[in-house]
Length: 205
Image 1 (cartoon, rainbow, N blue to C red):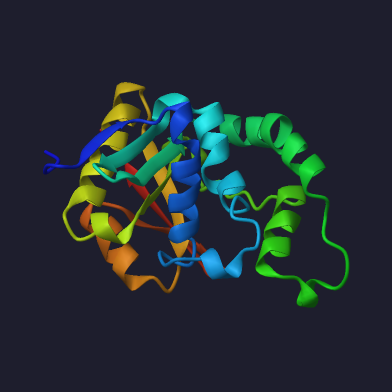
Image 2: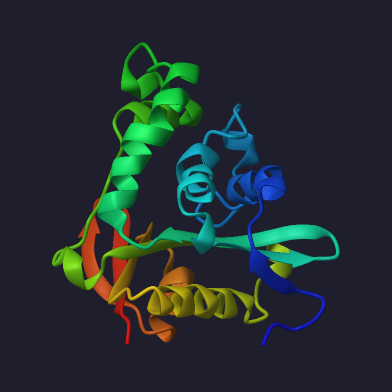
């Protein structure tokens, strides 16, 4: 049950700008990343745009009278999604944003994201067939602390179950203890650690 005045609904094309904004305003480990990026769409081209385009039936937004204030997005089959991401989504993004020049140590955070367009960091847990799906969720501050994140994850997981997925995984900042507690309360367990990223997974009924 989602408390008024909030509601969860499928994402629509008209939501694109708002969803990209939520991504940016939560892009610094849950905090506002606006000051770090001179291209406000840079993060969204990885974390929201491809899901809206390639997996629209697994893209949900949280809305209140002020507008979209959160989203949960993901993929049913991560291998198929990443194949489409590389071959269908990224070519145009790469044309718009060439690889940055100069030494990586001199790159801005925007340039580091542009580099990732050309060298995507893709993780698939083992055994993949147990956790083939994945998700991303972000909420603006006004929607936090109300149980809305958990409600959104439950809506997303129910859709995965309806589509026959046996399990789901996600990546998060390894130092984000609050997020780790949130996911573990929802039944996620640790799958792997890679650098500053912690990967969690959950088997589905």
